[in-house]
Length: 347
Image (cartoon, rainbow, N blue to C red; front, side, top):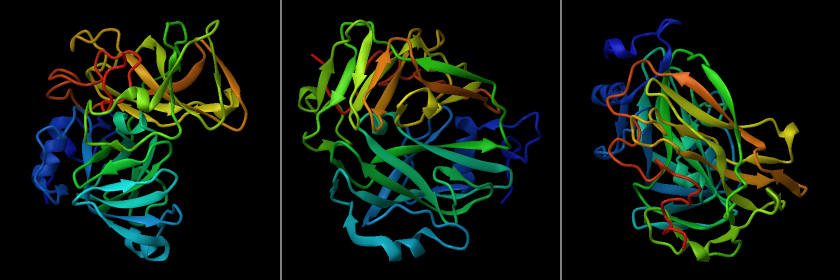
C-alpha cells in the first residue's frame, strides 16, 4: 500500500496532527477501514469519530492486553456475558463493558494515534478508553498498528442506552512526534448567577443517540456560587465552565489534560480534544468557553473563582484542514456553561 505525500514518514519539521483531508485519504487507501459505510460528518477537522459495532461484553474488571495478547484473548478471561447492540442495550452505571468498534486501523509507518472521549460523552460522566491488541496503554495507538479497535465503557453517574453506530470517542492521528507549542492553564468561572450543575445520583437512563430529548431538571441540579466559591463534595460530578474564552488557531489542535493533583483534591474527570477553529473569529465564535467535568476526591474541596483546574496543550497540524471547527454549525461552538447535547436547554 503506497502512502500519499501527506502521510509520508515525517521529519522533525513536519510532525503534526493530521487534518481532515489526510484522514479522508487514509480511509480511501484502507489504512482506516470500517464495517459499515462512512457517515458524512464522521471526519472532523482534526479527528475521526469512532462508532460502536454490534456487540459488547460486560466484564468483571478493566484490563490491558499487553505484549503478545489480543483484546479477544483477555475477554475470554474476564467476560461475564455478551450484549447485542443492534437493537440497543442499557449499560448500567457502576459496571464496566468492552465494546467492539466498527473502525479498524492499518497505519503506515510514521503514523500513530490517540483517542479521547467525545465532549458529549464526558458531560454525562461516561468513562471511555480505547483498547488495541498488545497495547500497554489506554487511548494511545502505537505507530504502524494493524488491528481492530475496542472501547472500554464505564458509566459513572447515569445508566446509558447505546446501540450499533453510537459515537462515544474520537481518534486523532499524528505524524511523528508533534512538539508542544504551548501549555495554558484553564481556570474555572464561579461569578455568574449559575455556577454550574451537579448530577443527580438516581436519575433515569440517558439515550446517547437522542439529542435534545431529555429534561435537564430530571438529571441535574443547578448550583449558585457563594462569594465566588463552590464546595465540591467527594464523589459528586459537576459541570462547570472555564473562566476565559478558548481559541484554537486553524493550524493547531489542543487537548485538555488534568492538572497535577497536588494543586487540589479534585480533577477534571475527562481529557478532551479541541479542534482547529474552536472559538475563533474566523468561525464566528469569539467568546467560546471550555466546559469542565470536575470530580472531587476523598475530601471536600473549596473551589475558588479563577482557580486552575485543567491545562490546554497545543500541537501543530501538518497543514490547515479543509474546514475548521464550527464552520458548518456545531452544538458546542459559541458555548458558555452548557450541558451535553442530549438535554434540552436549561430553563
